[in-house]
Image 1 (cartoon, rainbow, N blue to C red):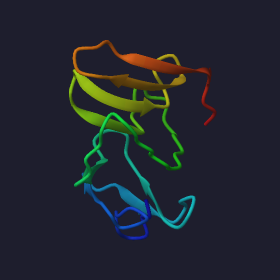
Image 2: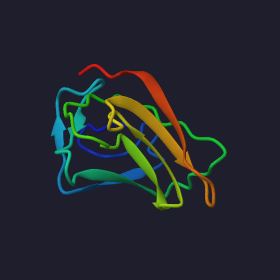
Image 3: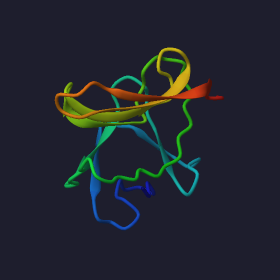
Length: 116
């Protein structure tokens, strides 16, 4: 995503909607970035039809909070169908979790904590 004043993806195929006013910052990896308060600021991806078959979410993140279970991304529409990535799974490790309808969650935990 290119956040130089507008929340659109690199190819301008999709837009995002920012909620609760995250801050644009000049210290992004490439151009501007976004800073979130860790409480109620987030983006939604508009018009994308995410399927279980294939997906790629490139990005740079700099977590600066020790809170448990913050999300770098979280897609889904219920507690029965989702996938997410958190830098702190409650035991200070990175976790990717995915759950298909009617199945149990399949977590993948990093073996070591992320460094801040």
